[in-house]
Length: 290
Image 1 (cartoon, rainbow, N blue to C red):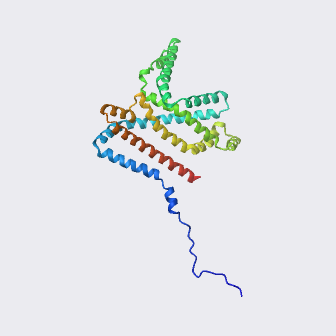
Image 2: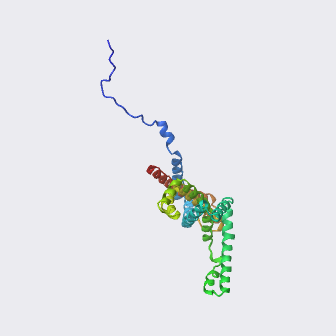
Image 3: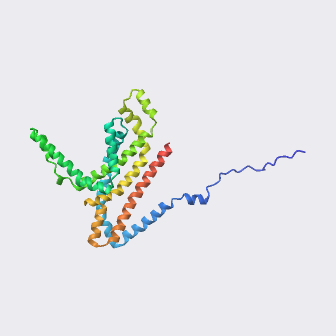
């Protein structure tokens, strides 16, 4: 007698194991919830407490300067970083070493020291050089052209402009390394294939390599922009009226240090968290496309 296999009388209900409650708890972004609650609490105090509300209305005047400085400086830093990154990969010994010198010099000096040096030493030196060049043009008879260069004056260069130059030069070195790494992440065979199709080196870089490299380093570029927004607070040492400098003025005139710096911290935290979330969204979309 052969035993019959046990067969269930009804249909089999096969269900995937649901994600356990513990896993969901562990994966939940508690840090984001904590920041969100802190922001709600802080804004509640700012808009309900008279002293905090007064501080906020005074400090928000500098928000436009902060945003303008960060955006303008980062735009110039992107251009400078891309050119320097290409120079780091160049086979020309002059451009390669010049780019390497620039990167190593900038990365070896603290940002605050660089801001002082570029704004108070570098920019005036360049202006004096332009004046001397204009004087030389005037001496050889090119007076109209020389007048253009001699018209430059150190007093005409605002501290806002000097701060933008300082941030651009500083972050250009860091972005150069990001671009260099992005370009090197592309397989060398793609360059060889483009050259075999008749493209020049410049065309291959422009149409084949750089679009892929920028896509690969986009999250890193976004993170550096967030860092620049925070580091833009350092330009307050040049008396640029950003939100940090305005907060210092308010605290110094009213002696309400708690209200001033709590409001300032909440404003920076809100800006950086929103930007960081935007970078994460872009990064997830890039991974989804991959």
